[in-house]
Length: 484
Image (tube, rainbow, N blue to C red):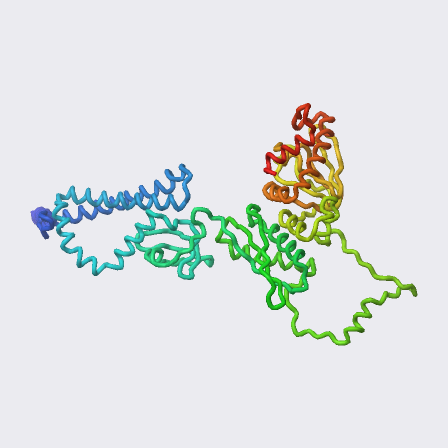
């Protein structure tokens, strides 16, 4: 009996506790906007707000990872749209929670207006960041993934929030920048609209160096760096002579601004190597005094004695080490070109060295480059008929047929020995032919002969009208393609 009484008393105590707890949950704690709030209602509102936040974040992630990538939008645009949608869902959900709680939104607006001034003064900086964040998300002057510079800080935008933006520097350091800084100060956005940008490498060399040799070395270095864009082409600007030095600017275009410092470093290494190969002195020699100059001059002019016979020492540089200017002048068309004309030619192409048996291009490949053989020899092999149709040697053109006729490569080009080519791409060939229309005539003449040779083998490139010769047809073709 005593055990049963104790059990009954315990049950009654538990019921009383639950009733008291329920009464506490249902009892009014305060009144807001005409609605009485109990502890249970407050807990319910908190749970609903948490659900709204989770739902908004889920919608944001769904847009960012699943839906928006299907439209092939940029990562910055995807981040902005998903963030804005997340905020909109949060605000709408918040108002729905208030409505389900029975809160009069009109009275809430009056209350908000009453305390707005005080809150605005107390949270002026936070509200400024909030508005700045919304401006960044809607106007998108910067986006996630952009490479920017602000306040001497450079890095990639990792995220844009309502209060601040996260930037990751090239050293891997994450920096939190208030959003207002992007609206109050000057911001350099290297990725805005078009990520391609131009960088400059200033170069100074001693005054005794040949300017055309320096031009060739700088362009050769630029074209060896794979991260430099082929179009627009690298350019060299002669800035003048100052303090006994020749001043140049090498300008190149790159497609990834975040690699700017790395590319500049690589270019400087390549420039140094090119200068060393061409014996270009990059430094000015000052304070040098040569004594007994007449004796030195006589020594230099004296023939060297070999086995008792006087022989003048003549050292001819190997072909691979000769200047591009010298190699071009061995081509019949460029023999009469002056210094200025050769500079214009060198600016439009580059030298390429190949070993024995190396393939230059294959049959059926698209024609994107024109070649002049500076040294060596190249076989023209038609794979479709398994036959060598020609061997091209120093001073001849190759690869021009498909480029000028607008057709795929009609043959495979392979080197028969160590070969040096002068390579000109389609865009630069247009400029080159405009400045050297005689070269266009030379190419058209050579091409007409080669077309007849290929047609004799059963390979037809383009049928010419009977009343028109192959030369005139090809010359018109060049004119229509390049507008010259």
